[in-house]
Image 1 (tube, rainbow, N blue to C red):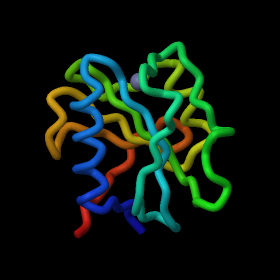
Image 2: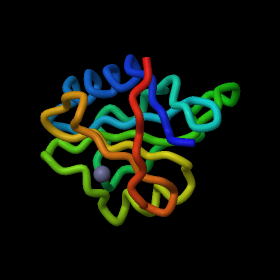
Image 3: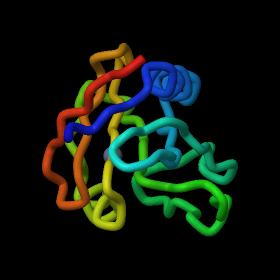
Length: 121
Ligand SMILES: [Zn+2]
């Protein structure tokens, strides 16, 4: 089964990415099985950079976290070595990148392998 993401979640990711630009934005992906159905923004990551640590302890216990998302202020969705290390604990990881339209993203599994992410309504 292919990974899917709800279109409004992807639109929200792009809006948060634009709002944070030129800084990075990061958040956690909420969902079930292979459907990303919501996003959780961590308040402590407003000025997230590659050197920062995402505060997973701040995430609510009741939500089902299946992945991560962060933005690149450059037109590249290639993960950094820090990104890859972080991806290893998540099933699905999205990188949005400049200019943040609906095609400006790539998704990776926990091994850093690119995953096709289908947009669903
Ligand atoms: Zn990155």
